[in-house]
Image (cartoon, rainbow, N blue to C red; front, top):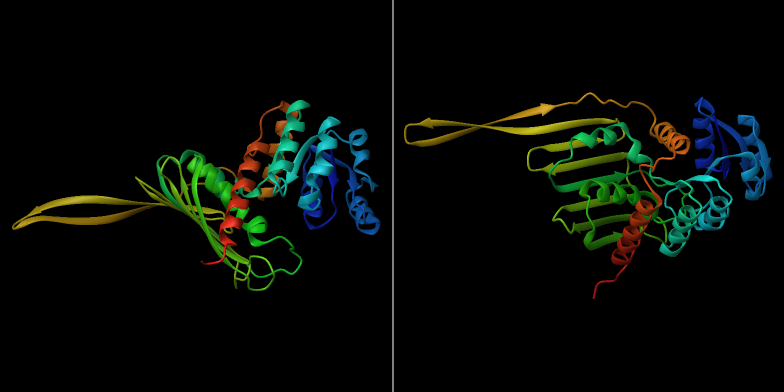
Length: 317
């Protein structure tokens, strides 16, 4: 059993604690938060100790989740990595590339596992793609939801970064060109953004994120040479469409008939993505394996998100 500390007792920290409480492979031993009332309440709910100081973590845990505000990730994470603690850091890995590099370097120098919490990678429908993605041409990712006043980051770092990381994984190539367009609707930062991406291997992507929608949409459409794949990440389902071409010779020329085939694969992995993420991270900690989303991959997603921000924020000239 791995002893785990939850650093940050806000909404995400509470979600992590809830999931960890149900996992036999983990024991929450410490909750860290500057807010005594909030931190103690979460600690009591999982039978853990409470502290205001992250320096208490190494004595009580082998691993920790860093669920503090993103700009604090580097200040909390680097000392813990240097103290020998394996980390699951919430997305984005940091708010600057320099801070992301500091976390990556601390993990490398101290032989620690650094995993970034891009939880959609553990959506059962996305996990099923491992054996399906073969020859992608274009991917379209859409993520929309109602406005939440509690969120302070813009929609790119709050929502779109999930899909930017997925696009990088699906294309399996470096980005060559980025164009973004966005608007401010409910806040002073970007609330709705569409990004166009071109990868070095020729794959293209369209990514749209909105927090001014009227319903929750999480959708991926993947165009390949041999099929068209549709994922609904909310319902956790996947559908594969193929066109079957049948040729018939008829008097006066050639006649074509197209009939579509639809496949609905059985999903091998079922469950809450956050729980699947934790099971994977704990396996990596136990067996010293590289995680599905490394610090370097989290850095690439952050770098791309910052490029989208810059492009979407440019005025028309």
